[in-house]
Image (cartoon, rainbow, N blue to C red; front, side, top):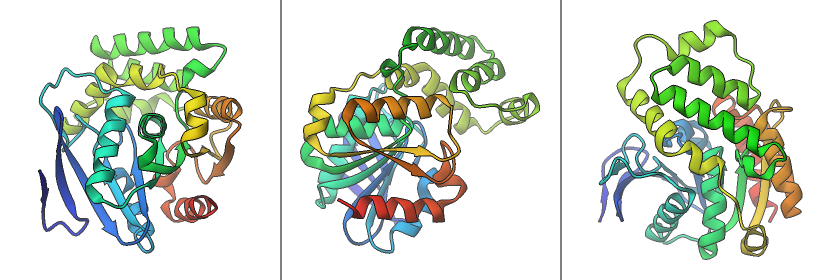
Length: 276
């Protein structure tokens, strides 16, 4: 079922196995998909609005996040499941194959899409995928991930975020962490955050790409923020690019540069996508 609303962004719902995907469509032209995990469609809205001037832009809430409900809330969110969802969305629009910008866990989703559904995508821009299995210190990073998840699920929210940022190589002052994650918070944000810690973080971080399949499936561009030097996702991005023999392209900002400066990010993304 594909139902539409009168939302100016073209909000729709697609029924897929085990879930109902909220997605939004803007503009007209070649299909460009913007996807995160766990980031939802709203995070990409300013970027999507800009890119809609010359593209059909698809954004979505990943399964189990915000408006994309699950039949089984205890189901883990794997890159393969999210890739299947993306393939079904591209098929529903009938405008594939698509260019896909995936950020963070969404970059892992986009790589899994190219690996398992190569006909759905012609270009993947994998922006800072947290693929720790590609790094030599993967065992230490896995331990840090497990400790972080355990702390969060044990009720130490700010402590878990403190560990997360330390593991990611992102320096945030303690008052900032307390302000962001302590005290009263939006219930929807908390629910999505808990799902990420409980059912998504491990599957995304521990995913091991089939490098041979990716080399033959699509054009892969590995993106990294110009302000992310030395951070974990800078390291994983470099490792992925070297393993694939792929382009490593610098984007404005850091891990969430598309949020901080969507105009500059859109200009860079256009140049990357049009270069194929």
